[in-house]
Every structure is written in structure tokens, then in C-alpha cells.
Length: 138
Image (cartoon, rainbow, N blue to C red; front, side, top):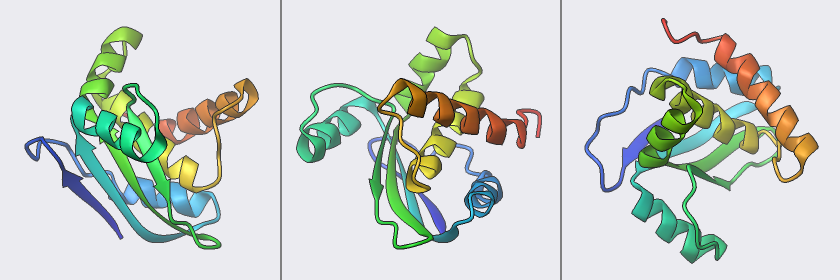
């Protein structure tokens, strides 16, 4: 089950992505467990980053992995402020950047990393592949 929650924000996000996100999970050979997306602002996610990861910087996503075997479960915190800023900086549509981050969290839970340049290239390639399966004009 995929659920969407809000911290320090009004419920204002298009959450029609459940079937697409489930398709990513199945395409990666995994099974859906419980995934909670928590949409928040920069300050909320900064506090999560500081308290749980001892990182003192803003980020667009933090994924907590509760995967057991092939069953994907986790909590995915997403800063909508960061996504908006990143979309502007990268000259991308907000909705496209949001979908990229949503897929990014699922890919982390599927076992993909992005610490090295090679890992990051593979992650971007996977994100692009799944973004193409759900074009913006859907």
C-alpha cells in the first residue's frame, strides 16, 4: 500500500501516481509492502536530516528503508520546497521533478544507490526510463 501524508503543508500534491509507482516496483522484480510518502517543507526535512542522519543540509528526499527480501517498504520524506527550487534551477517542470523524486525513493528501496558517479548515472538512467513510461501529459 502506498500512502501520502503531509507535514507543515496543506494537502496540495497530485497523488495520482500510485499505479505508476506500483509499476516501477513490479518492473524491478519487487513486491509492494507499505510505503509512506511524507510531503513536507525544507525546515521539516532539515530536522529529519539532522536528527536521524546527522547531516546539516537541505535535501529534496530522505528514504528510510524497511525492505524485507523482495518486499518494498519504507518511509520517503520529500521536501516540496526543494523540488520547486530544483525544477527552477534545472529548467524542468515542477511535476516532472516531483515524479523524478518519487521514483528516486522507490529506486532506493529497490536497492539502487547514488553515492558514486557510476551509481548516480545508473539511478538517473532508471529515473529517465520510468519517467518516460508516465509522460507529463497523462
